[in-house]
Amino acid sequence: MVLQTRLWDAAEHLKSDEAMSAYLNAAFEEDDPKLLMTVLGDIARAKGMSILSKETGLSRESLYRALSNEGNPTFSTILKVTRALGLRLTTEPVAKQSEPVA
Image (cartoon, rainbow, N blue to C red; front, top):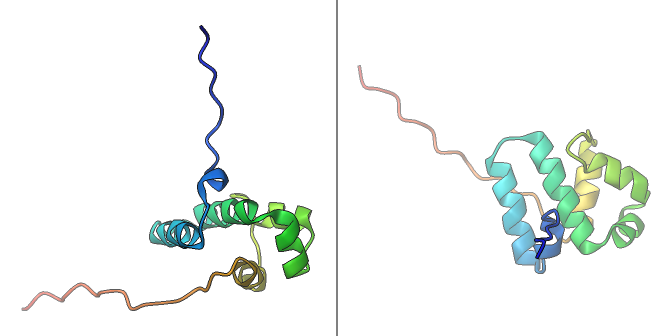
């Protein structure tokens, strides 16, 4: 018997808004812009690129290109995509390392 395998696709496992949000937050923790674009692309595919295209006004081809790990989208594109995905970008202060006492 031959074992058949296929590539793992994150988009197939992103079934809820909470899972999508957690996945995106984990990508932010890595400080890797290429990973972040790939993750946004995975989330976009999970939601549906055609739907996202209509909601953002961007073509499907542009979305696929911008949200690949080789993509370099403008910040306005990222904002359009995250809003259309029902996600919001937020910030929080980073804990500073305490300075050594002299």
